[in-house]
Image (cartoon, rainbow, N blue to C red; front, side):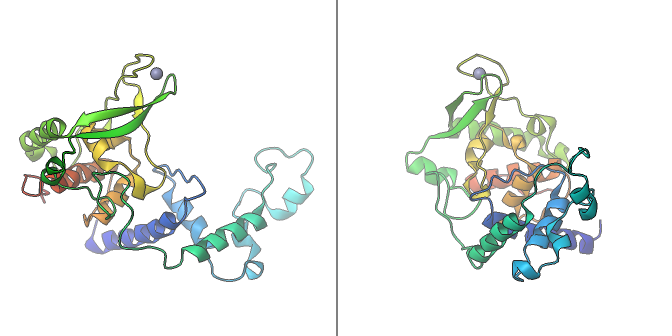
Length: 270
Ligand SMILES: [Zn+2]
């Protein structure tokens, strides 16, 4: 990929990200890794500053498989997806008012949700700082995939970080800027209620600025994040990153390690 292509991709991503961060407070936007472009198109269509009534109705009704004339006529038998009521007008009003509200809302700093997080997005305190403040255990919430109960897990900061740092130091040269499979497909903790192995998934905050990054790092659970969440981390920590999930995941691991130990061997290879 040329540098220019990468830049374009990044700009496209930034645009999406900015719209995304403002949203999601009251709607649970759960993106999966694939459909980013569709979501982008839809959001762009809805983010016009024109009053709703002047908007081209085609833009509001993004549902190409149901031509309007047909959907009106096929009320009885049609089936096949066209049946669901689509409150297009209402939802576009809602979206537009949200867009208005979020104008200029993005600030440099955020409220840190955890004692180990800083006021900057996707940034945690250093190991030295945390230990000096007596913060030795990093907690987070997980949910069992089998019994669905939630509970808290605590990781020993010094011990877990040492384990990861040692692994990185030993293996970095053979990783080629890609996360190894143990990071891509993490072994999940055992459920403390039903004893199911490999079953307790981290509960990851819907809003990206509230993600418990240090907990995910120490549990080596960052692979549970979506590509979009990982890109958010890289973007806000000034890591130029594009590409497949294993690459972005690798950079997230290294980036967090670097935040904890700025003098450690956590720079990118290339
Ligand atoms: Zn369970």
